[in-house]
Length: 272
Image (cartoon, rainbow, N blue to C red; front, side, top):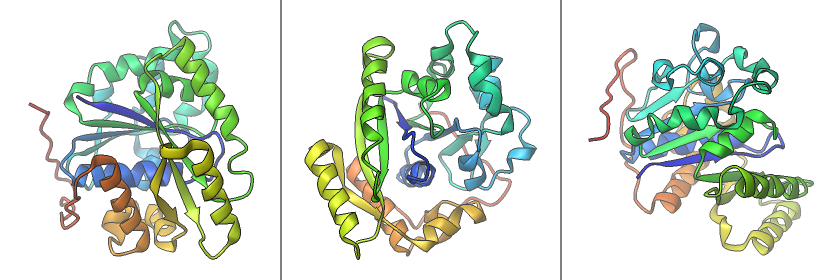
């Protein structure tokens, strides 16, 4: 059974894209077949995997607005078992263009239904807003993973997000669940980080992952090299924590000694 997970938080700068890229990479290293879908017009997930958005001719925009078969836009990545459905600047106007389209909330779901049986996990990086692109992601998903920055105001916007999830669940996708809450950018030298962690665990209880992602310079550097942290610096604390999180979610070890595929080579077999 495949699972579709959306990474979502309407507040920017929470580590949403970083978490989507690195969890997708570690899942793929665990021999899971993964499709990472970039639904953010900023295309940071696309560039973070080393793909130049300006060279993309067809993107998730064409899947949503022109109902292009999503497999037509798949891009190979440096990690075997990980494919990308890229974004580019075309997606910027999608929110407005979707308003008048038939079945506008279910465009992404319709596209993913055709391909989801070929993957173990389909992961969606949604934009930092609660507009139609994010609604499409939530309608297509089985669950939502919420990254939360360990900083002041971090928990305030969660009420609006939780209300949105409830509205989607009640009216559009009754099967939507919260996969978990991920605490990110933690600085354990400060009392503030400890307070945010305590408040999150008190309110969301077992939904908060045990693993907490710390602030780590190697995590912030990796996207500029177009690599997930597992390939950029697998010995860094950031890599160790995303590997730990992957084990927590999957309940299995991750073979991080897998070497990246040579550039230009694609090895991909559909699930039997």
